[in-house]
Length: 329
Image 1 (spheres, rainbow, N blue to C red):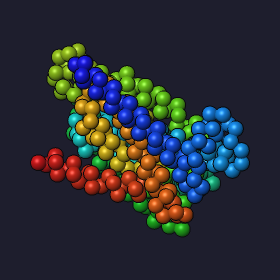
Image 2: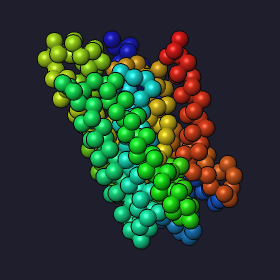
Image 3: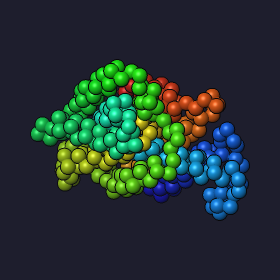
Image 4: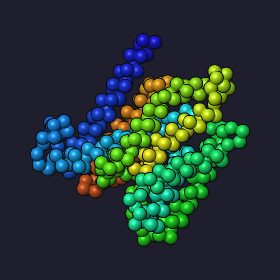
């Protein structure tokens, strides 16, 4: 038991170092390379003169912090959903977050673009509403993980057709919605950070509070009931927490895929299935992975900047196929 605790503590430290390293690399790397010494001086003492200070404080630092919170939110959301649905292929898309956020976000961007400043609350509302509808449709003497998945697929397909229709009727405005559809972090700044931060703090804290409940739920519904757990209420609460985390991330970064699928599996392979350790591990790894991929997306074809969703798709699709073949085996 002691050896396991020491191993978990060591891995948490490693994940923290990885997240911090990804953060520093993101701030240092770009069209203008900034030395580590200047980064530390500029952040801690606000004494850095000239252009580097403006680059750090007005461009790279807020974008990096937003990337870390988006990655942490999506990763923890995926970990919760994979556990509560007992489906290793589940991720935030399975509860309709992407389709709901996409429908409301695309409507705002292509139909009424004069209200594009409302994109974040509109996407958040759409994501939350879609998840709520899916949960209602899957209710029949309780909610089963299979019915949630099937309802999510049906509702996502229906909402996806609405997105396609809008893009067809307003084809001249598609470019404005492209980054949101792919998922990207370009031009994210302090207002975006202040928007996502409260949701991240509340969602991650609730996820940790429910981590013990998640461990009980992993024993199966019958065993969980025998241990005094109200299974339906717990499943609803955990799904709501996952929705909160994923919706806040999608409303800021767009329809960013595969973070919630890849990261929880990597964390589980390293630390095991104890959600008291898995949740903070997923958060730190999610922050590190998305921040590193965003840096890669900025630097691969300089001066052209790729949306980070393209990088995540290139990494996530092969991993998804690997999981699918492994599950079939």
